[in-house]
Length: 517
Image (cartoon, rainbow, N blue to C red; front, side, top):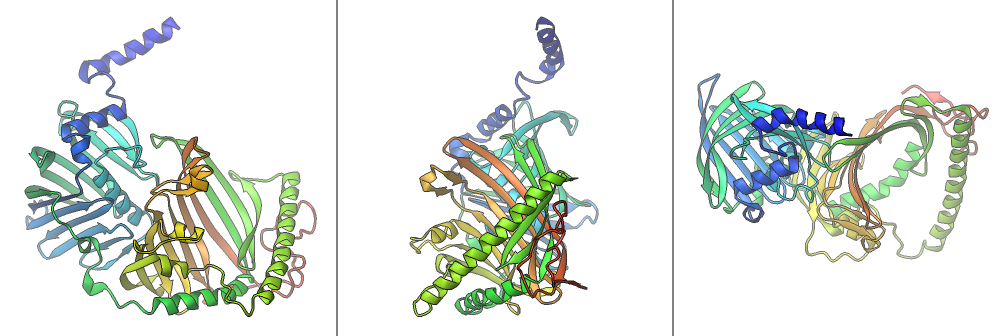
């Protein structure tokens, strides 16, 4: 034990000679930064921030303008006007978008998530990092412009990372590095001045892709008036929303026909789950692969591998038996539903569907875009503050904001992104509490020119269970290998030829034979 302590002390001596004690503690570094920046009380009251400046592009030597605007809770707008070139990256609290000389459109996937993360980061100012689901981890002692710096990695609840470098003397940020809208971005800060109690940089060196800008901030405004329209899509790109009540009604009514078509398909589903600790460090990874097919619109799945290894014979047999049990349960449920439908055929009876969004949400920024080769209607949604929720599904939807892509021709949802704007409590929070910021993405593809089928899902969950355990989990689900079948009977769906058979698709549903896609 004495030898271990001695070695530990010796190892710390070089660091102690150049950096204050406990500099490796990321939370301590951030606390020092918050105090230097103006204090948590002052920073927490910053609702909006606007920086405006001019620059000379190092490559073209053209003079341009730079604007950065943020607004609580997660709005973000960055604009660079370089001669006749314009580059805008924005997140309006529901969807991410960008504009340049070539295009204007919604950003999806990692590019959209990066802008959402930027909005979260710049508005939090690292105050209450834990509450804002930001993991902090000390990385290393680094050099920025030839001076010592402390590198801290910030990880969002979605697993996105940003590198921040702090001056160990002033405790202010001297550099940031992250991917923004799919482009590598590095920002160096200098010449801090106090503005309305907050220390702000008046010299910014911005490296974005192959471009570099030396920006001189001419105007900084804290808590000025900033309207929501600043972060919205340009008005000229928006279109008139159709009758959403009629559209949603068509989507709901079309669901039965879609479910019938889906029963002609089977495929493979791969799931990857990752758990994180409070610093953003990965504590657990898990991968599973399933084969599946549809019954009544529901996926009937069979596990076939874990962490890249096929199941053993006995374990696969048990999974096949589970599939058979699930089929029998589904058929029994179908019979009960048919009976109830007959009993209620003369009553005003309606299952909750997508139309619940129409009652609970308000819709903004309508636009038409191309998505995966299809023309779609895209619009953002957010809670309607005037709606009083009563049912569970209404209370759930009222906690959501996001963006949806709809194929008006086939009456189905092509993509949906949403996140919780507040905590959602099950059983008053005693059973579980889905935390603010929990988000999900659901995406489909138009298969065989006849039906939208799932291709991708992404879930980022912050949850507290039984008032005790809190954890963050990210899950990515990929669907592939869709095969189409002729279906005349479901009596033997999922029934293997022998106990060891793996149902890579709905096996031997005689008479059921694959067709070319």
